[in-house]
Length: 199
Image (cartoon, rainbow, N blue to C red):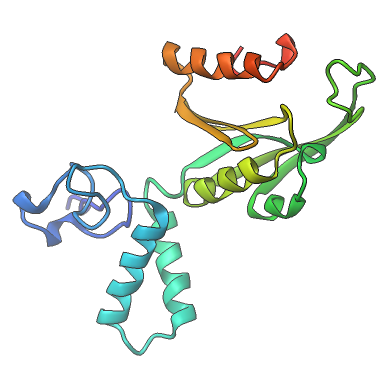
């Protein structure tokens, strides 16, 4: 027997919907907008919570949230892992690291004042972030990365986030136009050439 086709976002069975209700192949009509664009995680999570509450009002709010988050992470989309490096000394507030899974940490020394941004000792954290948390993490990075030119990157396959203070770039590292835009910005904030993103 063939396995039922499930929504790539919420893991719900697509057989629950009529063919004309499916806006985008592989996704249920609750997880995408009318144009077929995937809704943000918080919006999809809210929809899942509303669904569980209407179907099982006896379940506590905390249990509903745990169940919804589990279902979403089991789907193909929200469990995708973005990987990258965050330098601890680049952050004004280190609390955001708690949202990441740190897989490796190493210390590096850079005594060259033209490249070390005033921090000769760097604590480099290799991190993993699920797509469910990526927007929250990059938003906090853009808020807490030190000026003038600290940056961080997180990527999943060809998709990459390059984050500076108050600036977030998201696109494909195989898109020449996107790569040029990021490099131009790196030059505009006077990054050392050896540290230009996507070089």
